[in-house]
Amino acid sequence: VDQSMQLLILILNALIFFATDTRAFSLHPTFSFLRTRPICSTHTRTPPPFISADSSRGGLRVLEWIPSQKLLVGTARFVWNTIWLTMLSELAPQSPDGAYIRPAPQTGSTSSTWPADLPAIAGRYHVYLGNACPWCHRVSIALALRGLLGTEISLTNLIDNPERASRGGWCFDESDPDPLCGASDLRAVYNHCTPGGTYTGRCTAPLLVDLKVGAIISNESGDIVRMLNAFNSHRGSEPVVNLCPPELIAQIDETNRWVYTQINNGVYRCGFATRQEAYEQAECELHEGLARCNALLSSHRFLCGDTVTEADVRLLPTICRFDGVYASFFRCGRRLVRSDYLNLKRWLREMLMLTGPDLFDLSGARNSYYSNLFPLNPGGIVPAGPTAADLEMPIGAAQADPLAFTWSEC
Image (cartoon, rainbow, N blue to C red):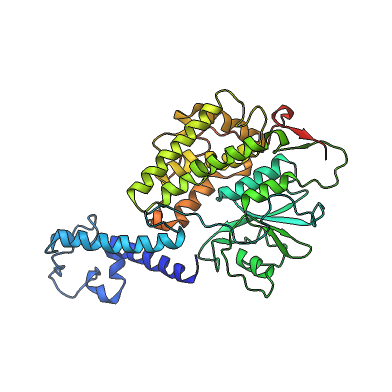
């Protein structure tokens, strides 16, 4: 969200506020007649006919004095839809038929293997992650499962605030400052890592950087997850978790392909669709994908067999958020994980126990979606739930289960 988008945010919020509360109008000199104030007379001032004497009714009661309800509704719908489409096209690029098209990552390595020219040295590399973002979440899951989180590779937890950030939505909190250049937001990190100091692309997370030379390694989550599986610093001969066993690579890649299209990106295709046909197609494909996962998990402990693989890592962030955020916010809750996809529900609980439930804050993510993606929720009301407790998500530290993983020598 750039500065022009921030201005539109403020204007839209002001319009909503003023249009729904008579008292708000009365604060502006133009609408001073709405103020309730004492006068030096025994007579009570009669308000204009379209202002209710009953303050509990609120608003301007436009329908009582407008000459044509059809004109009012048509005009309001046109203006609102025009603003909505304009804002949504900035937030989520659209195809001509109203389907969401996710922009591709724009910088860093185009390879999904750890760069050969970068030594696997603990403490040299750093990732920037945000709690609400599912693409960041898959990176934190890979770090946690491989024992790299905070030890081999350091990380910064970003906060999402599109009004503070100069581009995009990510900035830094005082409790978790930027270790590279003391940046105030993620755009400054991108600028610092760009020759000439001016980055022109999208400032997205996750972002993997080399702290030693101040360079971006990648901002593509799928590539970062695959890279991290090949990152093995000097840990002796101790076996390490392998999320991509060679014998399963083809199966993992094929599973990743349809899980991304139908589920990971499918929820966003539902939420950001601007035409009914595009929404219905995305919603149908999403639930076909969820049903397919549920069927696979009826005969396997995990998506590609009896051990956790990269395919599970990439699916988990979406399932974590599905009942608690996506089902309602993106209008795709015709069926729910907790009641309709029971094998997925079992798998979700197991995965959260393996990764550590504290890796993700559901309430924080819900607040972010409902507060910051304002074109989809202009009023800014955040639902009270369902919470992690409502969904019976486990709590506490990660639970070790060596049999859940494939192990390889460094």
